[in-house]
Image (cartoon, rainbow, N blue to C red; front, side, top):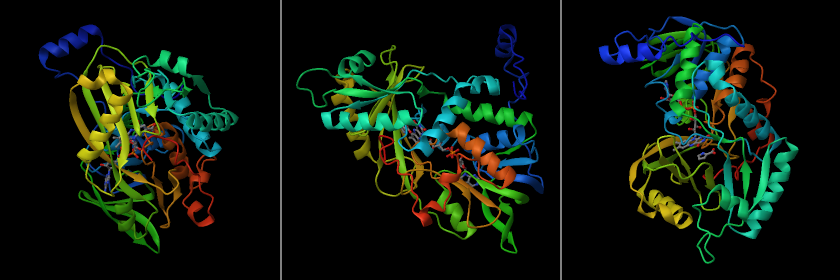
Amino acid sequence: MSALPRKSRYSAWSLLREGLRGQGGWTPAWRDHDPEPAYDVVVIGGGGHGLATAYYLARTHGIRRVAVLEKGWIGGGNTGRNTTIIRSNYFNPQSAALYDLSVRLYEGLSRELNYNIMFSQRGIMEVAHTDAELESMARAANAMRISGIDIELVSRQATLALAPLLDASPHCRWPVRGALVQRRGGTARHDAVAWGYARAADSLGVHIIQGCEVQGFEIEAGRVVGVRTNRGNIRAERIGMAVAGNSSVMAEMAGFTLPLQSYTLQAMVSEPLKPCLDTVVMSTSNGVYVSQSDKGEMVIGGNLDRSPSYAQRGSFRVTQSVLATLVEMFPAFATLKLMRQWGGTVDTSPDNSPLIGPSPLPGLYLNCGWGTGGFKAIPAGGTVFAQLLATGRHHELSAAFDLSRFATGELIDESHAGVQH
Ligand code: FAD
Ligand code: PYC
């Protein structure tokens, strides 16, 4: 087993004691540090990718003079706003390899971090509503199987058995023809992923610095040597940016542009229900998906709001169309009350694949462009980005995602990889 963060010191008695005396004896899961003048590596962005990168830098590469700079609070970006779907059913072999590494790392993550991330492999399914859709799914399934992904094309009957609340009536709006199912897919608790990596990184000596906004870069002889922040300047040998939703803004500060567009992706949760859906259901053609959280809420999402925006809320038009389609697919949800709706800003690339690799500014490295699907990629993204930052060279799984693909034309088109592209 790898280097472990400290074991839980809390028994049932200590929990009761803390509850009665107001939690005064609990130690924070990670420490608050003031920035030091210099580190070996600075990671900008305290979301899942930034925190995982810092953890693997320390654990795998033994680099412990690492700071994670977060302008707000850790996990307060898309990591804490997403609908937590984890899967590796991607079409291209490069994507399948990267995302499947992530699923495998998720499978061991609670143990690795000694922190319960509540990974629930309840399976994910993409429903086919037409025979043509079923045919493309069959072809996609073959491609995924060649890449070693555990994907199954299942019959209408099996689909309805997995999600009995789907409308199965003969003249329904969205007939169920079958589905693409990945049984190892599922969901995890998003905050726990951020907190687990933060605690583990902290215990290995990483400085997690919240309320620290990067506002510019220090450049000497054409190379970045540090960042300017609201808490002073910090020098570093290498700097990684994992600032989903803000990547283009940060690139502009560094003097280059990225092939990214920023959009709002929204999600909603209903009032809690008794357990009624024990898998994740997605309808790619409708741009709608739903799962049930451990609290019982239906977690609902859909397509991007298609006007570039930095607003973290989304338009009512999209909310309404997602919900209308959901109710057409699941008539039983028609009377559900919606509790909350929110949005996150996602950076999407032209081929819907991430950008990982050196930036045009020497010393600055990119982990961005995950669009609507980067939560599932956190453990793998952290692994490959840590290797890049530690050595200056790509991990074998990240080379294909280098920015240079937009010059060579070697794109990795994943435009059909999710409901929301
Ligand atoms: P973030 O978690 O956004 O972290 C980036 C951090 O950088 C933020 O905390 C931000 O405050 C910080 N930052 C920005 N600028 C600066 C600065 N100048 N200085 C310092 N810090 C800065 N993906 C899936 O795989 N499955 C899903 O089901 C899924 N559902 C989604 C649903 C919604 C509604 C949304 C919005 C996204 C969803 N995603 C999903 C995508 C996923 O959430 C993201 O791809 C992923 O969380 C990106 O992680 P990150 O660590 O790169 O970014
Ligand atoms: O990447 O699986 C995904 C996803 C689902 C909803 C948003 N992203």
